[in-house]
Length: 79
Image (cartoon, rainbow, N blue to C red):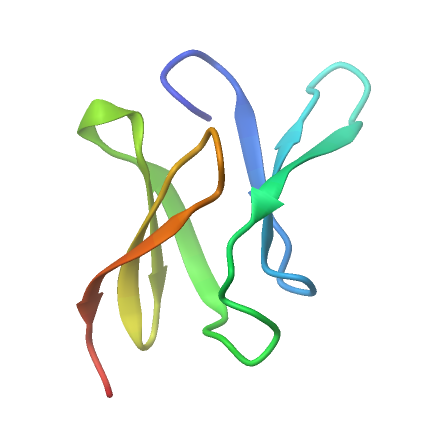
């Protein structure tokens, strides 16, 4: 959940970011992350200070903009 109470979800199939309506379970696409199907399989999402989503995989740590799904690589753990 975001600090404002919005539930976000990540699709392991298409690597896109979604919001989830907690009343109806309807999902809405926020945007495409650009990681692509050959990208990292993420294992965790959390919100950090400033409202950005932090996403973790075995190969890196990413910042995800919750408004656009734009991804910034913060740290590559394994090349």
